[in-house]
Image 1 (cartoon, rainbow, N blue to C red):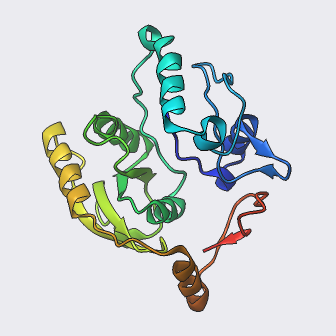
Image 2: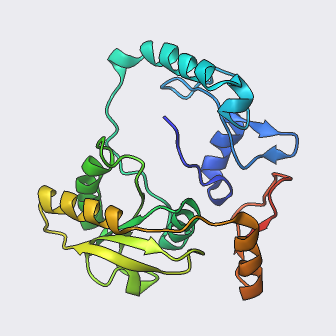
Length: 226
């Protein structure tokens, strides 16, 4: 399974990523290794599959042979893959050019109940990897992005400072209505490819900065990211 790490935004996650791979300067912006179901490394760590395997065919063969050992013991994933808060979720979704699904409940219990309904769809073959997710309860920041309780599909602006609600359904929506809403929102999400240097220059011109929770130890990444 490939995951989208938060890297310098979560201290506990950073410990795991450093175990997977850390360079001479410490935790780097990307980490790669094959792990068993208990989290033990089956391969040496590196920055990417290409560094470890070189050719795509070698990587595919390694995945096939490794997965075959655990197929019968594999359990379905049920938890919704969420980001820590709305501010971070907007930034990550904008950077990845993905829609953001906001799950909002009146309290923690309601939010988690709705999250479980969304999770069944998020891991479906049609929707896996299509979006990022965040679960919220009252009160929230960026109120305009989730004006009602329920599930919203949002298109973040290019710098993750706001966004547009594409689709919204109420908490009591059944599974079919919820599925239709997510599909509709994903189809409406449209972004233009961005050129990295131009994107960064525009951010600097507008005074937009992102300061990570943890110090950036990767020498290839500036500590303040736009």
